[in-house]
Image 1 (tube, one colour):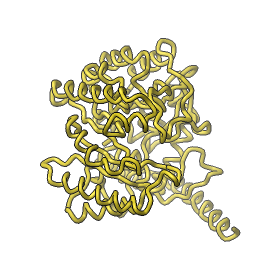
Image 2 (spheres, helix red, strand yellow; image 1 turned 90 degrees about the horizontal axis):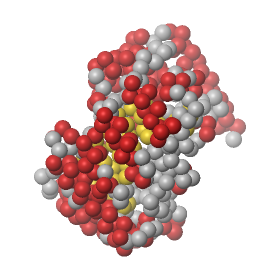
Image 3 (cartoon, one colour; image 1 turned 180 degrees about the vertical axis):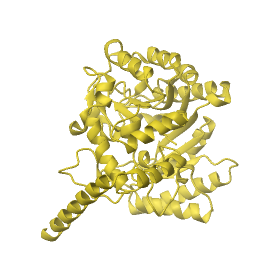
Length: 422
C-alpha cells in the first residue's frame, strides 16, 4: 500500500467507497502531497523537474498553514513531502513538522537528496515517517559533484544526513521506524560502480537499494552495445550477491533500457528470486483503478492544486489554488467533480476504456493502461479493491453503465476511422 492508506479506519474506507460509487464525495482528502518549494540545492543533469523551478515557496503564514488547519480539521491522516525542488530547503520546514506532530498527521514518505537531512532527522522520525526516498545517485564524492553539478563536500552532507536518519530510526519505537530507501542512477559513466553503490547503501543502513537507469537520455549518453554487455555482467554480480543475503535489499529497474531489463528479469528467474517491488498482484481481470480523486490532492509550490503528482505543471490539469480558495471549495468543486466522473467511467467499464484527447480533460493513456501507474494498482489494500470491484458491478445503475458503454463505443469507432484514413 502507498501514500498512507494504512492510516485509514474502516469508517474512512467505507465513506471513500461510497464516494467512488455515488455522485457525491463522503469525506476527504485523507492524504495530501505537499511540494513546499521548487527550489533545489543541487542541479542533476538528468533532472525531470527543472521546468518546475521558479524560485518559489509556499508562504507559511498566509497560505500553507491555513490550508493545513482546514485539512487537519477534516479527514487528513498523512502527507507526502516532495516536489520539483528539494523539500527540506523549505524555510518553514520546522514549523511544518511541528504542525504535523501536534495534529497527528503522519508523513507517508519524503523525497529528498538528504543534504539538509541531518538537522531534521530526529524531528521527522518523531512526527512519524513511513518511507524516506533518498536520491543519492552516485557512490563517491567526485562523481556526485559531476552528476549533481555541485561541490564534492555536499556528498559528505548527504552521507551525514542518511546516517542521522538511520540513527534516529534505530532509537525510535519499532512502530515509528521508517524504511530508508536509497536510489542510485546507473548509466554509462558509472556502470562499473554498481557493486560500490550497493556496498555504500548497506554501510549506510538502507532497507532497500534501488538501481535505476536514467529516463530520457540523449543518444550520446545512452549505453552502447558494448557497454550494455559490460553492464549485464555487473548486474549479474550484484543480483547474485544480493540473492545470498538473509534479507535481500536490492531492486533493479532498467525500464528505459529494454535489453538490460530483460537480462535482469532472466537473472531473477534463474536465481528463483524477485525484487520487493515485483510483488504486485497479478490478475486476468482488471480490478484495480485510480482512487486519487477521492483520496488525495497534490499542492505545488505555486499554490496550484492538481489531483495527481503526474499532472503537476500542466495548466489544463489544475483543479484549484490554495492561495485564494478554501480546501473544501477545491475538493468539492467542478474541476474535481469532472476528474471523478472521468475515472468513475473507467471503473464502470472495468478498464476497457478508449481515451479521447478531445473529450477527456484529465484521464491520460497511462491512467488507462494496466500497471502503468502505481497509484492505480497498489495505493489501497487488496481487500478494498475487491470490495470496490464487487460493489461497482452490483450497484452501478443501468443508465450509468449504458452511457459509459455508448460513449466508449463512439470513441472506439472514431479511433478506428482515424486509423483507416491515415
